[in-house]
Length: 112
Picture 1 (cartoon, rainbow, N blue to C red):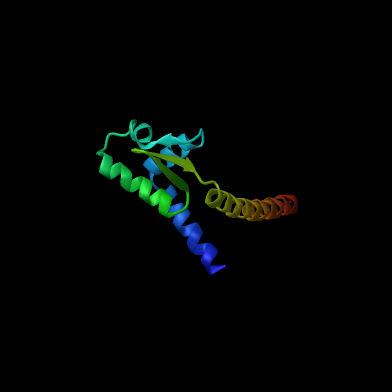
Picture 2 (picture 1 turned 90 degrees about the vertical axis):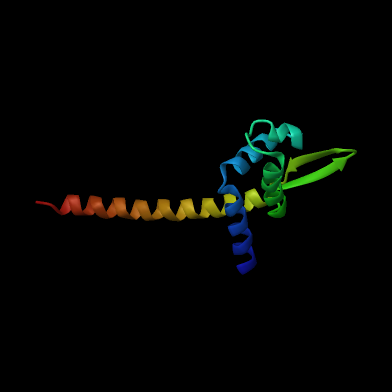
């Protein structure tokens, strides 16, 4: 369990940046070369490459180099683990809110 927690921490840390989320969103449509991924962002290529390095280091993307072109693709497994964690949390909070709702209804019904 501790290793899973560390992995989730890394995934959420990577998702904490809007540039990286935008890259993942773009890659959900299919693989893309670095030049295409970097095009919408107003930053120097070395700065953009740091974002790709974080995503790859966290296992969220994979890259392949063919000739002089490096292409990235989405690696969905870590995102699926984060999604499972969020679904568990959502279920827990929905159950708690249902309990609160029932309690408030009981209080309302007890009023004279």
